[in-house]
Length: 305
Image (tube, rainbow, N blue to C red; front, side, top):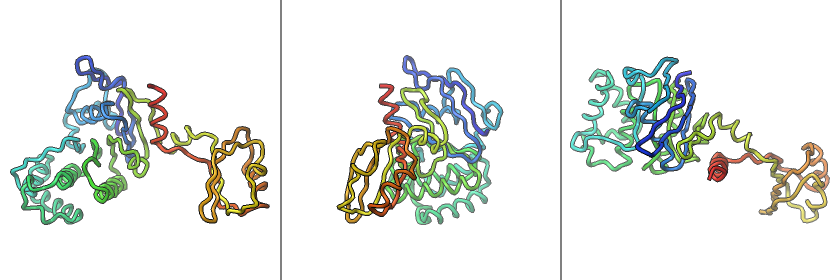
């Protein structure tokens, strides 16, 4: 296990930011910490990088207590981006690389490669103040990953990016994972979570309410609801065909396709249902409806309201 947070508590006066939060992360996994604004996500990121100290609890990195020197093996992209506006982009990128122990010569080689990859070579001699927010975020992303850290911490990495650059960032995050980098990031963008993450931790009102592999969580919260899709046949009557085990939730006809949402109230093997339907129409698909992580998050938050 590369990262373990145990019973982390952090308060600011009377405000509880994190309340006995536990998070585990294995090498090569991508974990999203998801929650509403003010749930305590950014505090977790800051504690991991050592910018904040927990009131209580323990943090282990590579099975040892997290030490200040471990920061050289960790990359951190804060939600509040910070670049020196009066410096030139290339000059500042080299400076930040040197802080991570990379020689000037090696830093320039790596930076030129990343600038070419992101198609931002023309920015090298521009001043940071000439860049848009999205441009500056690209530069800071590069400086965060340049020293090839074992663990990357991203706080709201997609904030401020247009859809094209969000996709660019997703691709790079997945490439980093392929190379063995472990990644944890905070977000409230559920779409991005399901596309690139292997694991998720849902935070609500300073507490972790669920954590685990995304596929397992979605299966766990799936109800007995199914979608039957078939060729539209005006003579096919679902009400008279599907059987008493099912209740029809909704139906929709679009072109030559008919989609029927079924709630299964008592057990019925899939083959039994399909054998009833096949004599009357061609079946396109029959599948269980698995809820999205967004649906699950909303459900759990409402239950705790």
